Length: 239
Image (tube, rainbow, N blue to C red):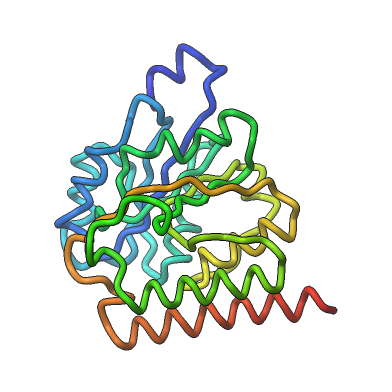
């Protein structure tokens, strides 16, 4: 527990959840770059890694929880379940493509009372050339366009770097276990009337090869699940 929270109970408790699958090369960099003075805890959800991800995460101060069922959503749900009753959840990836030091900007609209959920928009921020592959940019644009047409809200991104109040997360009742996690959260936030905003965030080339856009099967699997999730909630909306 961060000592600052122990001496000032009025500070909101921020729990960071980092899903991680075979990210031994990058997880230490991610953890070292976090603004720990703002945080109550950091939980790394080790998603059946076969490398030293869990050991390195623990050595860099994170609390590690194991989730053997493979899937981005499974890992996020495990991290949520293990969290120590926070006021705010922050999610980011373990591959060091996000800039953890920008966490303050991501949570600022919540701390200021202006939002219940904040999406870190990579498309609006500074991007390293080649950080978002063409297939990722296309899928992102397609998904956000469909959300705008169906739900009337203009998201700019489905980026993984995001913050949400614990009460907002409880209300949306996340269910997805794999690649539909981010889009499910964004759709349900609109459905439940959460105050949603975006802030620009920086984005760089990840360390290692992406498990999603770095492979043909991953790209098609993620794309299918995202579109299926949008269709699912669109049909439910019309009933």
